[in-house]
Length: 123
Image 1 (spheres, rainbow, N blue to C red):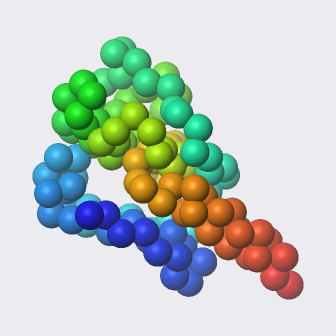
Image 2 (image 1 turned 90 degrees about the vertical axis):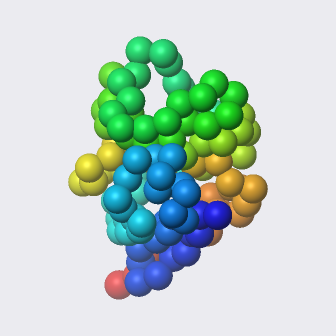
């Protein structure tokens, strides 16, 4: 199961081997500086059949994982249900958005926003 943590002002996302497999990625870990997270929400993200999956997995109602090219830009998805979203809008990263589903989505949203606030208020 994927693991989220905040270390050294970075959001770290560690994928298990099977999550890497479904997402067709060699990246076991994503490290995103908090300053590169423009926005974080738990709102359901837009999704369309016109998105180009390259590479990734899509089984309707089961999983959407991997890299998707959309009119909004390049996105990384690892979604396994239709709720509990965590959407990260990024700048200065290869992905414009990263979208996940996880049981503690609201808790992680609060942690990310709180850590960003602390970072912005540092001298």
